Length: 322
Image 1 (cartoon, helix red, strand yellow):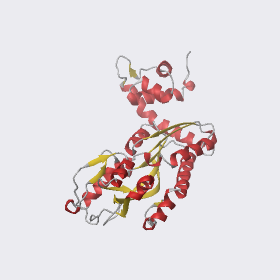
Image 2 (tube, one colour):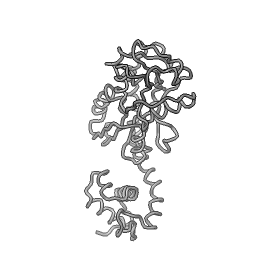
Image 3 (cartoon, rainbow, N blue to C red):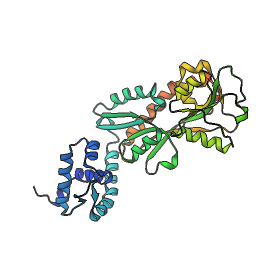
Image 4 (cartoon, rainbow, N blue to C red):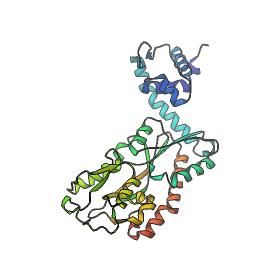
């Protein structure tokens, strides 16, 4: 079949962009749900339509020709503009959305994430959902690669680049120690500690934020134990193995350990993390708004009133961001 210029396919351009960025037909097939042979067929049609070789077909992984690199630079902005226009055109028709890839940090796994999933499935009955739990930096990385549409993360704003974010929760850091154990939490120095400090894993953003704040205060604490799971840290503190720094939201999840630990304001200069909903530029605004509104509604029904009642001194710091 011969193609005229008016027959140029948007699908061809999208697949070319994915293959150019990932260097693999298989990666493009995995991302789009098409077969490798179908992806290859679309790329061949594009090259025949243009009358040029966009890839060096003798090389693996796939490499762009100079013409292909120039073509990619020219279409990147155009494809972004088209996707954004499509998302905005559909923003008033959320029930017609067909696919949503959502990533959340594990902080919401127990209570909010299941309720959010039920809500979205009712609001978007024609939509196919893909849901995963991971760390903030990995979710942001997947958003940049367009492997996710929407993410709920604790983040550092300088890492977002062209992603869109809507902060929704201020989550202050707290000090937790075994119940009844006397140690001078107001003096966070090695000499004042009668228990070891239990850390979050150094690969996590929350750990980097805590360690950065301690360095600003001139505090250096020896490494004794670290893990990625907040409930495990709470369990270790409850068992008397040490003390830790966590956040109000993470403390609220460890309900089974709360009777065995004491929680205090972070001594001296306080600090907090910001939780945000982050989306790709072409994600529908109506979907973003729906997810944000439901998140804040669920927080207002669960963690926030519970902690404000249990720890009234959190009312001015554990708050939603309007």
